[in-house]
Image 1: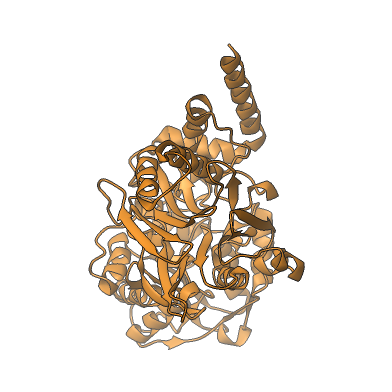
Image 2: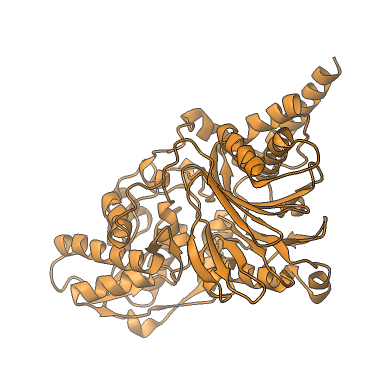
Length: 505
């Protein structure tokens, strides 16, 4: 889960990209970067940290140009090294910068393939650098002489789609030519485009979420379609083409559950409206399981569960209260390393209002339950504040499987619902009762808002990986890499040495 943005304007874009990244900060707090284009040259600044901390006045002054791209990142593959902050850059052909949201599932095999066949060397563990080099190679393959036109770019993206597996929403700049954006053939990660009419012609902004467009005064045009590529040249002329053979739209359901801002619209569905519908469907299930008088008050776990909790309380005719106050200067707990750090962070992140709990049977509503660490701490906080009974409800179904498409889901053994039924999870989080949303109800919540959305990427709930290349062995390797990073680095070094020796021979 990263936030990406690309801009083509008639005036300097450094401030626009910076402001857009602030609006997308919820998608990644690990690192941030901006690369701008001026003439045939690029300027770039990137580092670990929040957007506001990475960029100072001197950095902004060093980013001239009327087009550029940016990214805010948290790592789902690779390490947290500053070298892996994006955008990435290669100098041939033409010079290309790229920012990527998603995760390639065949990155390791592509690294070997590129070294042996494409004569390209990957310097980091980031799959985004792999993606950049695949794009650069395919552009190089289709260009004749020193020129480049949109049809060549689209042909290069079409070949990239055939080579690359996984999820990817991409913005890239080609020096001297313009801005390229494309989305994987399954449409897993979101990407949309907006425009702004000026006296000098239209300006375009491409971003992960519509909130970045609207917050900067751009008019929402549409979502980038699965498999589609869009090219905007330096004169502001837009070209687009479908580059995949059999594209299908499968937006990530977890975007609607948790990741996206509620004021965004993704693939024609308002995130806020889908969360309201999740609350309605969850209310239907709770009504069947509990009698009148079993619940005194409904409380959300701030912030993303608030729409579902409010709608649930309204539909059940129950009192709605804010029992927890959030400290907004603490990072998201499910992307923090180590159970001890997460457990300590919960108490720093949330504070209970004791008077709202004392002597009451409380229904706590959260957007989802991943590891269960936060849920357990919250249940205990409610008890410590005087709640006589704590019922926990999840607006999402049980998270049973890892996500391999760009969300930092933990290993199977760390997922509290993996291998456990609802009753066992309830005991683990020490609640008096637990209610999960049904998978079909979650999907219906999105379809209710946009009936054109028929299928979703929901692998963390149902274990179905739509790209068709995820096996148990693959998941085992991913988990081994998370648990033994040093050993993986040593294996990578040995592999590279063997490739070098084979090349010499």
